[in-house]
Length: 115
Image: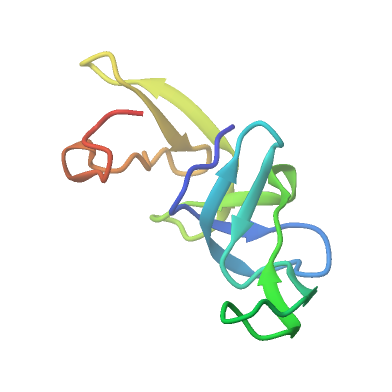
């Protein structure tokens, strides 16, 4: 899957077409992504004693990864993803329109450079 957590994506189909949001979760096995503020559904919840209020809760539902495109940080457009190898052998994602790479700085990554 070419979409990673914290990428900005553009929805290209469905009820939220044209909206942009940040990827909150990626479900690789299902091929789905959860995006902040996109694909909001209403869920009816049953109250639990001391835990939560009963009623209708709005939450973000996963949507198919094929319905979104990654937004290039340089050209600010939805783009397809290409791959290339750097001189040090690292494989990076890049914009098919302008050629900009969008890999995060692995030294400052939350996971310490491991995936």
